[in-house]
Length: 135
Image (tube, rainbow, N blue to C red; front, side):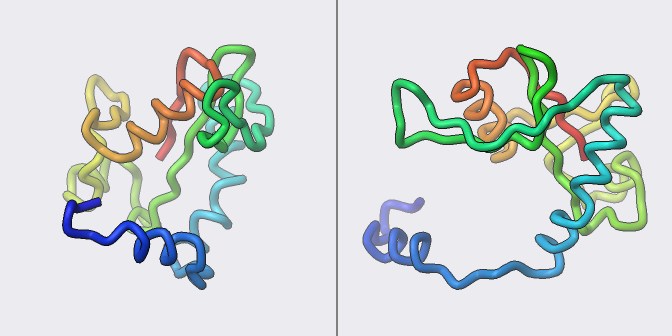
């Protein structure tokens, strides 16, 4: 939030927003269950439902990972509407996806993107050690 932004106004917008979604969020809601199945098959892992985690020491912090892997891992999935008809590698190469890069055939989330901060928060709150990020 910029220093010039009024906190009260921002709080009201967040708490009382009537945003009910758009094409991009609807796409994500529809595709995420399919993506979870795909992650399990591609990575040969079992992903269990996560639910809501509330931090034990800071109960004002909470996280809702997209899934859990064993005792130490979690899954975060982003179903990008802009990639509807292309692979993540094609989306990165075309410039549509700027928050990831490909390295040695692996999808890498850039460290300075909000999704990285989201994942780091989820790892802290859930006390887990790693995250499989899927796009």
